[in-house]
Image: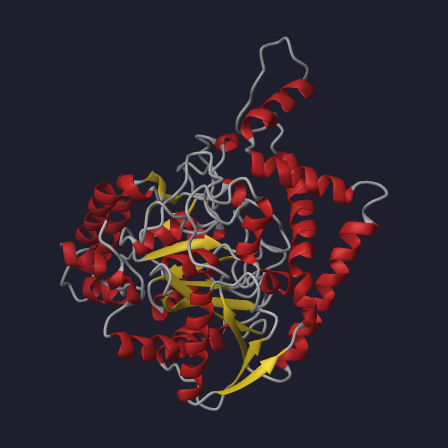
Length: 497
């Protein structure tokens, strides 16, 4: 069954539906792969072998009864440990929730189960999704399958690494400032941030509520589209959920073409701080799109320059509010409850022990920005910048169909290299943050390897809100062209673990 782990999700589902392989055999092959390589990668925080095999058997039983199987029935998936999963540990990469087993499923989790997807377990992440490298997990860093001494990106590095190391064909991530797209770029995989509100946030443990968005991670554009279709759609349990039809992302992925499209190159996403190999691969991608029939237009979005400082006021401010619920009184970790300490002291001791350094840093930044006398000067100004960035996008999409840029300024950096330099770490999300502030859709897919280090480079595609299908149309065309040029998927060139 060793070849099974290299099948795409679409191929896997087809093989199960046709009876060429059972869902249990597929699940076991991936569980065996996890056992063989995850000690080197540390993509998973919890492997639910019994739950996965039971879900796979349910798919096989449904097929035996003659039931119609969904397009992802029996396909294994790695779930970022920020979505509640009934009866399965959900820690958000934090000691604060160590061992917590939710009594309910997130809407996204439930939709995966309803689709017959086999959830293998929960993946490692930066604590409460705060980070750009998955080094901020309380349970240790994840390694990049291309080079385990380097980061896989963050905060969803575990999900991306699970896919890149063939431990799962599909995964789920969340994107607050680039945490799906940035790991995808650094691991040579596909990651999509849907339009904000396109995928329910009910049961997603909140970091920054106006920015957080769950989305698909995969090895191909079509696989990402199939997963996107399974998890998207209106949810009355989420007040920010969009009550509108889901764009036809699967059809777009199956018939990708850029002929006649106007594609904008964002002028502000280049220059100082960008690795030469990243810019070289991006320039080649621009030429490829031109060869495929697209019209290339240079676009200026001047307020993108202020996206990062605005983000690092808005996101920590919302985090300081959201994380106030972890007070040692209701659930999770409790320290100092010995009858000698007051409730306030127990809360303080628990938060000191339960939160890591990066979470504490962001809580303090956010609390300061929201404090009396500083709200208007910092948080209020940041929200005004957010409006300007949204207007830049609106102006740009008045001229072009989609925008493109590098996904990240550099390739994967060594674990520990930026641990003591928060600003250098934050710059990893330079190109991805504007889309979160505006709420539109964006994708990262591989566009080659950098000359300096032989590591993956990501191409970012950005589409207007509720035009997610444009991502898949362009992404599928680019992917097909690269596959023809390379002769094999980029991940086939990764060193063996």
